[in-house]
Amino acid sequence: MQSYIEDALEKKIWAVVGVSPKKEKYGYKVYKSLKDKGYQVYPVNPLYTDVEGDKCYQSLRFLPVVPQVVNMVVAPKFGKQYVDEAGELGVEYIWFQPGAESPELVNAAESKGLKAIYGACVLLQSR
Image (cartoon, rainbow, N blue to C red; front, side, top):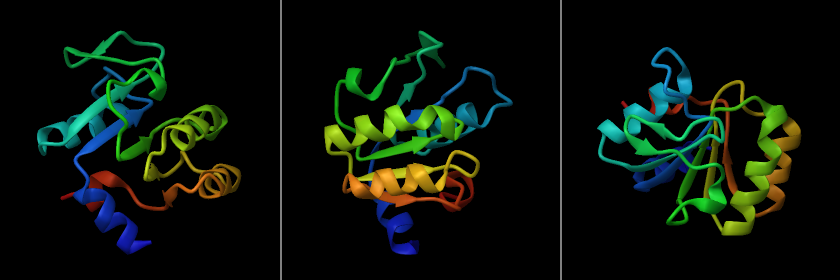
């Protein structure tokens, strides 16, 4: 899995599913950290229209580009739709933040050919 982490961090086009405009939430912290590090990162959350002045998308299907990495910051019960979309779009990596993963979601992602990362926080890995 460490090689997946290293390879994913080299990719520059990301989507953060479960982004939030609330600065105390991990969805915000992950999005802001990636953006500040120079990644092209798209916020995805159907509850918001913008985050940090950037358009927030309802789903991965509506993004202007296919992200190379999808970072999941949503409860597992909300994750299936995004795993399915990532597989349909041909996303390479799906990174489940701690608490966003479940065995079912990881298995679903891998069965769709996605390289799944879990048990690791992007905030700690991308220092």
